[in-house]
Length: 447
Image 1 (cartoon, rainbow, N blue to C red):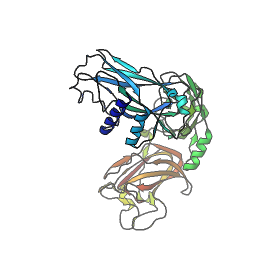
Image 2: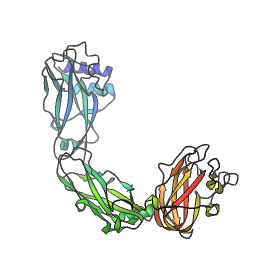
Image 3: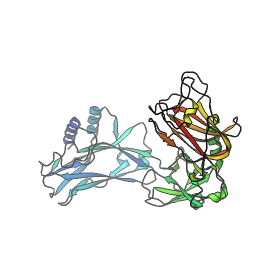
Image 4: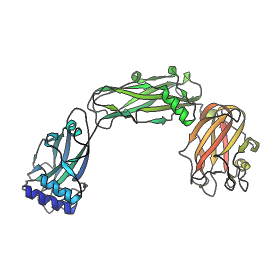
């Protein structure tokens, strides 16, 4: 048996030993009955340390010209000599998984006439595997053997490569998550933040989510923003922050219900931290345990009014002396354009400022890229507001969804900030990575 296994193994190595697609029936019709693994070759497995064993199933197919036949096959663990031969051929250093770390529940499969496939059931003792040396590459190598019927030499063996992880709980959305809440429609809005895990859930347990204002302080400092903490009387968390999990549910939504009647227009953040899990052995993922859930409360776009822009309301720190004046932004002709400085050096990023006739707290804007091409189209725009032209506060940053082609128009969503009379649009890079930019037309609306 041992010699037959090694010969069969080396034959398979000479052909192919990578995981194969299940081209069922390919090259098999000439045989009355042929047996093979649906997945063959090296098969990585991610297992989780939960205090319980993990059952794994692998399909063995029956194919050939006589699908109604009766067949038997044995599931055989490789000998040490066979694994050594594989390592020599493949340049690997696999070590056979200790026998106490697994159990093959059915090591002989019996196919009835109606059976097209059978399942190999293997129990992995994940706690024991987790305690094995991390410096050793352990595998469970198995083959199909001892059958009166044919066994496909290319798909007769597989190496199961287990990797045991500590199960974790985490937010499905992390970092800053932007949401917009307008003053039209229902006064109450329901937002959701999913809490999830990376495997099928078999347990009943609770997770705890808490508000952590320090997260917002850190974010505002690091990003030069001044978002406000969502007022405590303006929201509720489902379950008061307790997220219940039940078997078969690996993702649960925590609901955030917001009452806009308790808000004034502005950018708010609910800084959330995942702090606890009642399931023994589970951990909170330290890289995905926080979320800055942003809620911008804005007036409906229909309430904004067009700004009657004139050229004396526009200014820039980077006017190109050879072409493209600011006046071209307002002439209604997309063939003319404003071009920021390229022939002269300008310190800092290039911007256009708009001085408004009256104080405002919300805006939207529209621009069109250069007619010829989008090479100098903005790739990131920072919008800031000021009352005096000296002290600016950030209203928002745009870095996705901006047009990159020629003669394309962008229309922003409604944006809110602290009261402003001056708005600065700073382009930090264009579509090709340079620091200048080109607009052919520009307009604004404010509230």
